[in-house]
Length: 485
Figure 1 (tube, one colour):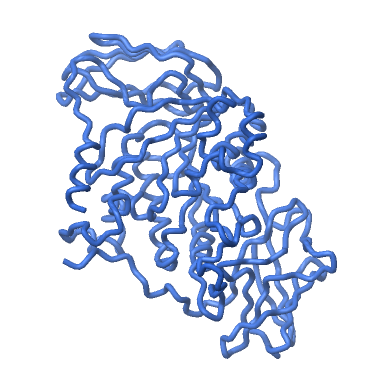
Figure 2 (figure 1 turned 90 degrees about the vertical axis):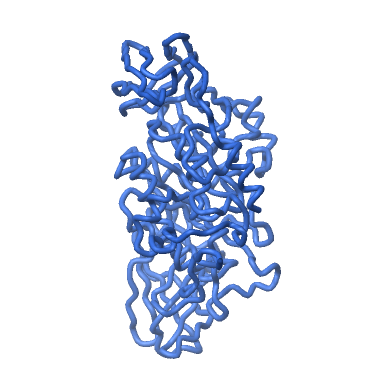
């Protein structure tokens, strides 16, 4: 493992020995720059060399530092293109077909990596892809023990039949929805890696800013007992996020959590920590951050044991994601209704991308649109009934059942034992009763690895899972720890 790490770390080191002016690997033809924000253009040259950047009507010159690094700050530009971007020193770099629009970071693990060629109706999606003003740059997989200057070479590829098959599916369907409603170019920087934990995407400085992680990170340690180099704390931030900063972006979308379910309770800390860390690194305290809540999946391989009776790590992770919504500038796409019980990688990524997009369109771009489904707001008890109220019901609650029966509810009394409950809609609320519970004190909805709830709003978005109790859950004492020496 140590040898592997050393090889990967060496590969990740970018040496700048050429006298020529150079740019980061993701500054290429076809790139998309963020509209209405200051634009940072940077690169390397001989030390103290004068470098001039020209873009549209702007021209800025700067002298490189003693380390050869230089950077200019251009004034914000309106959406449009294609334009030329020219960088001159001893040599000249001329980038063409540069667009200005909306740029989003797309990150996470395998469900963000999942490609268009593997989605439901993939052939039709690829055939109908005709969006040359949507472009995606995919950051190649890399790990590093220290922050890196650059990513591996790549290209900004248009969302056309020739290229879209290799796109991140969630990213593409998200961008397509934005493009169709905003009518401006959309740039995607896709940087994800399957099977990775959130801690790999947090910088060392981010950990040191956390009371929970500071002491752990200050200790000398090795990686022999870590699952792999891509789970090393900070390894993916160093190699796949740090080189992108301070490229101007609108925000980030995120699909991750499957690899953190065994420490779901701690995700309440680590996930908001990552968001705060990225915002700090980009020096954008209001950086929009929108994420996908885990879908429905039988993590016990046919046993369906993840539930209130036995503990559901997936439900607990979903709750940690839900609680992250207390962080300003965040939003969540609920997907419990579109999972596949036997496949951790559901093929319906169209709805995932759309649900992220409508959330963003409402809350970031101020469009008049319903951004998602009903969210639990309060519970009232009346005798043997629990009356559940919801916020954000859109045009109203509906039940996807011909007889009006709502699935997915459980109730418990003071003994904390949950039983399946009957639930029906009455005057905009859900009335929950249970034969085994004469006086309910707690209610849960879709609290299981595999969910079967059927409560939606009229716009077609599912109600978010919830519980009204604060009783101890199965992952509450499980922590992320350094390997024993």
